[in-house]
Image (tube, rainbow, N blue to C red):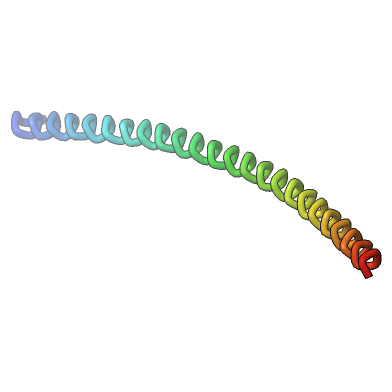
Amino acid sequence: MLDYDHYLELEDLRLRVRDLEAKVENLRMSRRVLMNILEASERGKRLETEKLERINDRLRRENRRYAQRLMEQNRLILALQEQLRQLGG
């Protein structure tokens, strides 16, 4: 049979166990919340990266077309300069 001191000690231990279980549950919940935030952040970064890659591809295509137009304009200018040189003597 338990005496009163042992009974109090057991009750104290039960309270500590309940307190620790509550803390563990809070940690689990906090971890879930943090994981959800991390997943949302990763998803946002991935979407932003994909968007920036699409913009980068579009800008490269536009830059390539612009460079081709400049080269064509330079060819025309050189051809006209050559015609002027031939006409002017």
